[in-house]
Image (cartoon, rainbow, N blue to C red):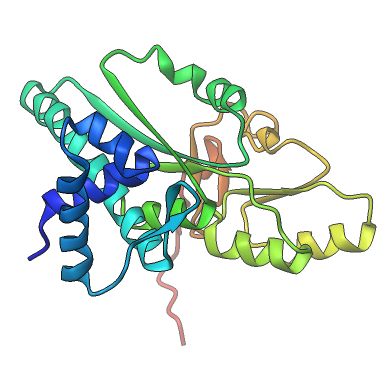
Length: 244
């Protein structure tokens, strides 16, 4: 069984960038913290920290351990408030991941419409796209806002096929051939070229008031108006006809 106290000391040392600052934060002796981290390394069977100038740096094993420790203690820090919220039944929790490429101003602008939501507990986590998507898959995050630099059109469409919602996708390009290929091969209810994805809307598409959205194929897909919410009823009058 992993000793989480040892893991916590390792996490603090890494966050603070060295044993001295960690000791100051924890109000403990450097030697004590160092011994605890060595015990963790012994338990895991790998060196986690290595000297780097006047400070320390993570080994490859240390990077993996630190990433897991970040998850563990982020969840741990959220437990008290989550418990209070569950007991009162009034707190809504939203965990959002931001990739390193998104500026703080852009992130604030994207989240501004929900900031005034009563009893909302907003948790923001910044990291690399790959790490954030892994946390999303494990349901540690509710959504990820990310910017990914791709190597070309093939790489972009592969990413869309894996992570897209099949609702709306768009391409900005002056190349007609690439635009046509994007339209043919990307699987989504609406595919746009050089236009905002916000145009995928029932009213904009002439369906009248948008009543719903569907990402399935039976029987409606994409923006749904009144007609898409209805089904057919066949009424037949006969005089004894049979099928032969």
